[in-house]
Structures are given as C-alpha cells and as structure tokens.
Image (cartoon, rainbow, N blue to C red; front, side, top):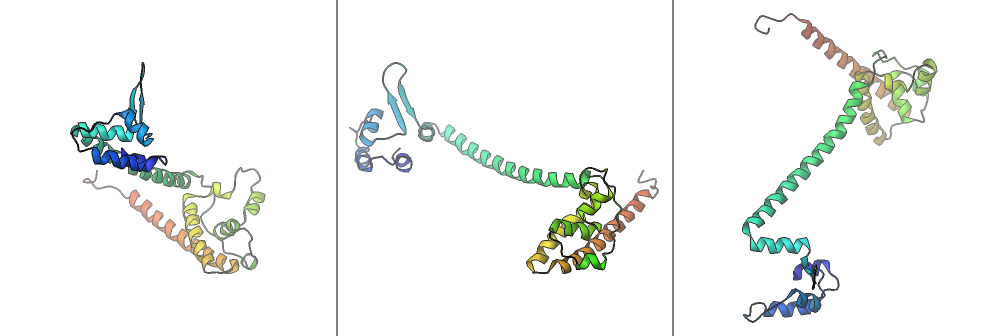
Length: 227
C-alpha cells in the first residue's frame, strides 16, 4: 500500500508510513483503514462508516490483497496477464495485415481497360520537367499525363489508374519505390523519367511473359493420374 501511494499520491506522507513499517512486526500492532488514511493521507483506500459504507480499495491494491489471501487467484492473475499480452500482439499483427489487405484489394479489383504495352517516350516527354511526381510516374508507365488521358476519355469517371490492370498497378507500386531512391540520389526528373520508363517496360514484359507461360501450363491436358 505504501509503494502504491508513493507512486500515485504526491501528498502521501512517507515519514508516517515508515513509522507503521517499523511497528508492523510487533504483536501489539493494529492498523485500521481509517487510521491509515488519516495518518498518511492515503488515497488508495477509502473507508466510510454508516449505512452503505465500507472499505474500498483501488483495484491494484485489491488485487494484491486477493493474491495474498488466495494463491489460486494470484495464479489466475498471472495467466490472465499473459493471455492479454498475447491477445494484444495478435491484434497488432491483425491490424497490420488488414492495412496490407486494403492495398492488395485495390490492386486486384481495379478494372483493366488499358493495353499493357508501355509506349516509348518522345524527345519532348524526356526533356520536359514534370512538376508533379505522380504525373511523372503516369508518363513513365502509361505514356501520358492524367490530363491527357482525361481529354482522350471524357466519358470515363475517375482517372487512368482506376482503369489500369493489376499488372500495371503492381509495376506502378515498384516505380514509386524506385523513384524515391532516385530522388535520394538527387537525380533530376529528366533523367529519372527515362530510368523509370525503361524499368516499367522491362517489368511488364517479365510479368506478361510469366503469365503467358502459366496460362500455357494450365491449358495442358491432364494425365490420368492427375485427374
């Protein structure tokens, strides 16, 4: 009780507490809740007389009393604490996985309406310094800015990324990470856009090639054992 008050009660009287500690081992020692509160200005225990009264303790102190009275209860407290810590870790892991799932969901469900071949950049596009990094990635991957796509598709809602394939969105995520590295290397946009465009072409070719090979394997007739 004295340690709890020391940690939680700035008005606690430590000298009076030390006096009680010295007397605690004597057979004649007697300490009531009222005497404890009045002598030390304790707040962890409240004692009220009369009808509806009684002695009430903060749950930290109550748990300590219960643990002292019952070893079984003390073991229960230990087990429950361990269970709560394990549950807390599981909840944190679940939250992280949930956020990742949101990102993957967008990649898997966005509509695919654009062709997958990345167009080569013109001299004008290479020399042009794009003020918007997001639009620079659009040009590197799709070969056009968001505004140029909008002009070409006035009847479509959203933007060109909403109509990109899963493969294109995967490459776009990779380009964002690669672009961050290039920015750290202080490369100008005119150089970065060329490197990003070449990377986009190479990655899409690899992804499409792997998908074609997979489709061919799936299309092969099954043997009798496989059936």
